[in-house]
Amino acid sequence: QVQLVESGGGLVQPGGSLRLSCAASGSILRLPAMGWYRQSPGKEREWVASITSGSTNYADSVKGRFTISRDNAKNTVYLQMNSLKPEDTAVYYCYTFLNAMNYWGKGTLVTVSS
Image (cartoon, rainbow, N blue to C red; front, side):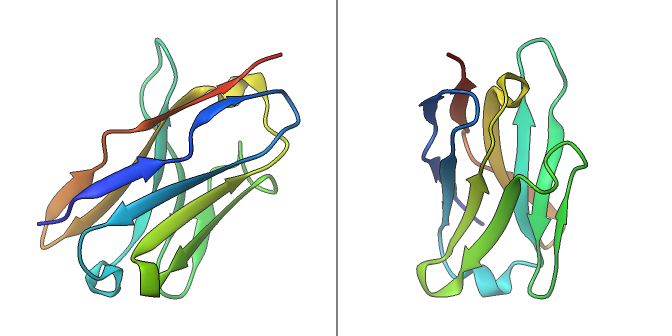
């Protein structure tokens, strides 16, 4: 079983930056991949970015602005978000999977507004 805890959300002005963190219970080296989804009010949850031991992938809407990274020693995955736009406003969820089970954090709210 895996517990995921997100942090780092908040209110930021358009053009600003935030860094989200996702701390996992146990070693993340055992996890095939980790990543982020987001859900805006009235919309379905959408995939944002993912990372494996050897690659990263991004949704077109965030490519070039967001960077996903991992610190294996801290069992933590990060999402650096730059050049934020109002449409990035959402609850951001960390996710992973292990042994055919999906795991989600409770989410952290990011609000981009002036």
